Length: 343
Image (cartoon, rainbow, N blue to C red; front, side, top):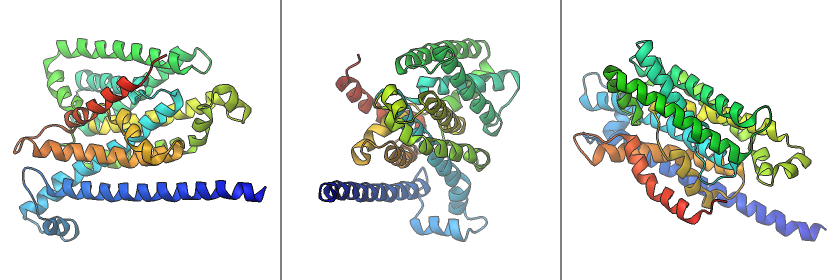
C-alpha cells in the first residue's frame, strides 16, 4: 500500500512546488508592473527618483509630488480593484461551472452603477469617496435580488442563475439609461466613473474599503474546497458532506464583497473577472484555492498594466484603464466563445 501511495504523494508534492514557483514568478511580474506604474506616464521619472519620493520625499520637488500624490494612489487602487475582480471571476466560474461566467452574472456591475446614478442624481454626491458606499450597497442588493428570483427558496441552478442575472442586468441597465437621459449633469459625472478610470482618485477610498476586500478573500478561500466538490455535481458534493446551498450563498457573498468593492473603487472594469482565471489556470491547475491565488495576482497585474498602457499610448493625454482592459481582454473572450460548446 505504501509503495503505491508514495509516487502519488511525490507527484502532488512536485505539483505544489511547481505551482508555488509559478506564483512566485507572477509576483515578481507584479512588482515590475507596480514599478512601471510609479515611473511611467506623461512624465517619465527615473527609478532613483521614484525610490527617493517613497522613502525621503522633498517638499516642492515636482517628481516627488507626482509619484506620491498621483501615481501611488492610482497604483494602489489598481491593485485592489484587480485582485478583487480576479478573485471574484475565478469564484464565479467555479461555482456556476460556466467558463464564461463573470461577476456581472450576478448583476454586480449594473447594481453598483444604478446606485451611483441614484447617489449623483437624488443625493447630490459628487466625490468618489461619497458614492463608493452606494456602489457597494447597489452591488449587494442586485446580487440578493438575482439569488432570490433564481432560487425561490431553494439553491438556484447554474443555468437559472445565469439567465436571471442576465435579465436583471438588462432591466437595471435600462433604468440607468432612463435616468441619464433625463439629467445631463448626472451623465457628465457618471461617464467618468463608468469607463473604469484610476485617475483622479485618492487613497481615502482604498483606506475605507480594503477591509471588505479582505473579508471577501477570506470567504473565497474558505469556501474553495466546497467549490471543488460542487464541480462534481450537487449529489456527489452532498454525499461528501458539502451543503451546496450554503456553499453557494457564501460564495455569492464573497463575490459581492470582492467585485462590489472593486467596482466601487474603480468603476466597472469589463472582462477582467472573465479573462484572468483563464489566463492563470494553466499554471494554477484545477484546485480552486490555487486558481484564486493566481487570479488575485493576475487581476492586479492586468488592471495596473492596463492603466500604464493607457498613459503611454496617447501621451500627454490618457486612455482609461477600463477601456484598455476591455481591449486586451476581447481577443481572449472571442477565443473562449469559439472553443466553448454551450449545452
